[in-house]
Length: 293
Image 1 (cartoon, rainbow, N blue to C red):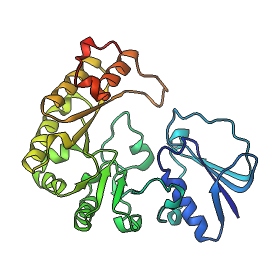
Image 2 (cartoon, one colour; image 1 turned 120 degrees about the vertical axis):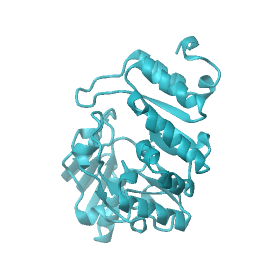
Image 3 (spheres, one colour; image 1 turned 90 degrees about the vertical axis):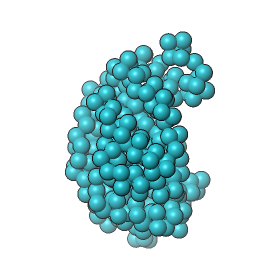
């Protein structure tokens, strides 16, 4: 069969579902390639991760078109077990040298702005590192709450043992790090590609976030290696959290709140705060009240 792949979001970040589909189909002897206009395919797979990605007009024909992904607000379409546990086809993205995968799926939390509980359910083991690491020495891990899983913690031990550099790009739960200094010490042994990513989404998390920072510092992690996603709903509250993180040397990254179910846009003031915070040259030299945007 002739298989076509279409990443609606573009090629700025590897699409894991398409990589697994490619690997599985190649193992069946099928021909797999990125979809080209005016070509015909037996099966065309279209994957969309982000709701804001625009589908451009694309003249391609196929006997069967399969589309899925959160970007389509499709929370039910899943890969088969055989495809899900195929090692990704890294040849699709030769410029990217890291491995990509999930150690766990799901999350025990039910944050109102997050689609994970609806899409993936409660947290559970998903795959051992060896399933997708191949021969790579770096890994981008997309777990939503790996620290809430005993299996996930065992896999982090394996990451330490093998000396793999990692980035948990969805963030780690600061509340768990706050509660357990042993986890902070485990994380201090990991080789990080960039930062230890966490979230400081609302003022109610102030105490655990500050305690997590102290536990990590006590374990030997420098504050500048601590990166926090800061959700912006109320601008004044978000600004206070941003300045609090700055005062302890951590790295804030502001994200304006959007309701994906209602498809509401962020406000101008939310976007202004995010631009100021995330442009570090401006953030380090201009106060927010003096920033025009």
